[in-house]
Length: 190
Image 1: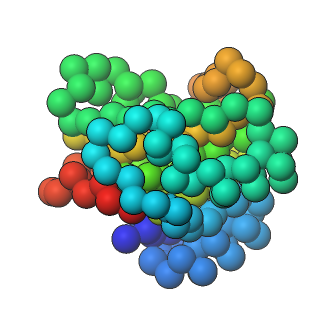
Image 2: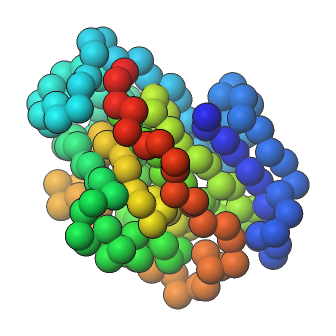
């Protein structure tokens, strides 16, 4: 279940707001300038589906965002708990950083934890299957996929080079919760 927890940026131990209601999450994040939507597949997506099959299942929503926001490229990224490089991938995203373009991710399967540092608040967003998050360019954030990552995500970009981060050097991410490994993260159907 998707979840939003909001913290003061000085205290990662006690959230000031928690909700699992999608409409409330979208409203709260929208007020901070962050897009949060739920998408439905136009046809079933099965484990092992190709990038083209995954994109085809969500083509109408992808095309809508590309028209609305001017995104130029789309791809699919996936990571499983048995990936030998999973620890290195996790570390890469755990420090606070920004991007010169929006970071847009739609979770076809699995889950991930986006944590956004906006003003004096930290918004921790647990994204799961069916969730799209659009983090505006310049927003301080970090991402955790857990020690046993499992996700399949569609990514949209303005920059054909893809994911390019500028790290802030702030250690704030170390003071906030991490994503715990899921007990059953094999569900894929949409």
